[in-house]
Amino acid sequence: MALVLDTDLADIQTYVQGTPNHLFAQLRRECPVYWNERVDGGPGMWCITKYADIAAIGRDPKRFTSTRGVNITRIPEEMAEVYAQSLLIFMDAPRHTRLRGLVNSTFTPKRAVAMQPLIRKYTSRAIDAVIGAGECDLFHVAASPPIATICALLGVPDEDHGRVLDWTNRTFGQEDPEYAAGPDDTAAAFSEVFGYALQLAADRRQDPRDDLMSELAHAEIDGEPITDMELSYLFFLFLTAGNDTTRTLILNAVNILLATGVWDELGADVSLIPNAVEEVLRLEPSVRGMGRTAIEDVTVRDVTIKAGDHLYMWYCSGNRDEDVFADPDRLDPRRPNASKHQSFGGGGPHFCSGAALARTQATIVIEELLSRMSDLELAGDPVRARATQFASFKHMPVRFSPGPKIVGQT
Ligand code: HEM
Image (cartoon, rainbow, N blue to C red):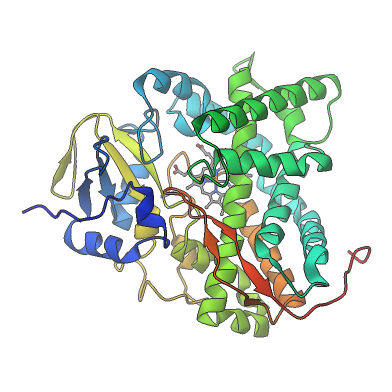
């Protein structure tokens, strides 16, 4: 008989205490391609939980489309076509290939590397703001450098950082009532970001500078400028996706490194930090998974996924697949294949454009925290945001020995 869990993996309640890793371990063992029914009667989905299947599906866009949505729930039919025309992450080839080519040529690894000194400066500034107090909500320290970095890259001025945080929370954090007052509020946040993007683009067409928006505002594909919708959504994706996921990575890192005692190990040998960041990404991915829809009937293992069925690739499960990672639940900063995790996608054309930047930022922030708050400890229970797809924290009370500010020395 087919396995039936008494838990709906699309239900927000399932994630109140974090990712239910024991359920994913059961699925990998007993039913790696699992049909999940919704408690609310909504459309079900296939749950893909093995590393190899996730990698194969992510690399097979001819049979698994992104155009019907990449979230846990499928987007309504009437919106699918508009999204697929203009939203990078919901596109298939050939439009995706062309727009992604543009992203790859503007948002280059060289640009990410060049940001390193600035990232360190933004991190020092964020730590300076709290170091004298000996306690803080680490959320603000983790949120600030990714916002400052992406704003500097895009050309968004410093005085708008607060608005960027607000937009991020009301769109990415839309499932949490502390962040968004409901669907209308989220829709309003989207239109505010899009309006801002078009205004910034208009400014840069008049007065180009050395930033990403100047390049996007002048970009052409096959001799045609990209559409306003493509431009606004790219801006949104960089601005919010890049900062929400990165701050989550930083908070996950502190939480898990402290809980396992690896924090002290990194303090004694900072060369382990980059690989420890990979382990955090593996064990606690900021994005739990991504969806696709089958274009034709496809057999995965012994299960036939019918044309039109929605499926979800659970990166959090692939990352703990015993066939790929030995002793998968253990955080091992020396794990040789730690970076093989699927937290930036299982491979394929939609693989995260910001992976190098996110890795660099998390490494620098952990280095700085270890150097200036080596005795950091939790001062209360961290509070998770209510979310299914994104594993975010919204508060993390910590204490540490007070220290001096270093403004002006960086
Ligand atoms: C820890 C941080 C991050 C995580 C965990 C993350 C994760 C992901 C995932 C899972 C995808 C989809 C992969 C797929 O469907 O195969 C994605 C796509 C994307 N990410 Fe990230 N991301 C992070 C940071 C960033 C940053 C810093 C940026 C840019 C500044 C960024 C920009 C993008 C873009 C543009 C896409 C869409 C790519 C496409 O559709 O072709 N991400 N990311």
